[in-house]
Image 1 (cartoon, rainbow, N blue to C red):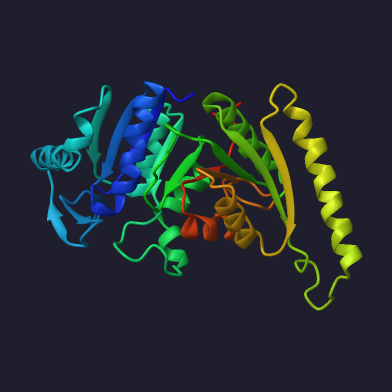
Image 2: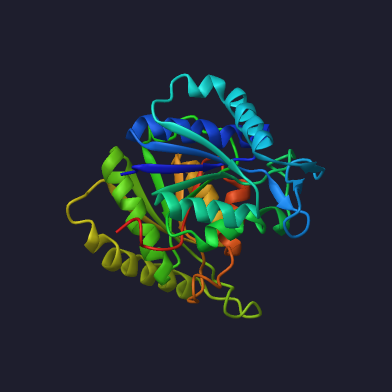
Length: 305
């Protein structure tokens, strides 16, 4: 399913969890793994100084310095590289998200793997939009392939996958996410859990819905899921459908824990807008920050059709 994988890393401990997943997937799918680090942003014009994205310090770079960075990356991932069969380390200078997207297009990768953030802080804390809103958000917004975001250690990660949770809002983008989730479930023999949370207060917070109204909404959503997604799974019967009421990201996280989900798959954004202009939807953002498993953000159908 994956022939080429791009692991975008800061080559720091905050990316260790993502690194293990990336190397696992290389071996699982016999894929080519590109280990890619963007050193920093040029201070001005064609200056030979860059602002290191990890430390914020200004350093002078040249070809020798880039080779030294690559050697450091080899040392950082030396243990994982021992078992690697087809990996390549590369480093460059530039704006991180642009260089990651350029590398992904240049190598025509099927999957991008990233950490949720680059600063060493408590991943369980309520985090700020700036963390997800910078490089990871921009990559997820513009990437033509799925982007898997790792914020915590992953114990199963594709080797022992048994449960995949697909969260939908019935948007056009969700169709691409569903295609990715269903194909992956079939490939690895995992159970696919189709999930939708009815946000009953989204239309009018001042009006309290009666229980019959809520139950009617839940029934309508279930029928819609059975018709729209169930009809596409005729050759696959290892799935179930669940609809609940509540705040979407909270319900998705609760459902993932109940089902012991190994992966959450969601659409990159929730509004019907141009993917180039979309921002990472707040539901996806909150799920990424709090999920105990990897989260796959799917923006386009290009690499999953």
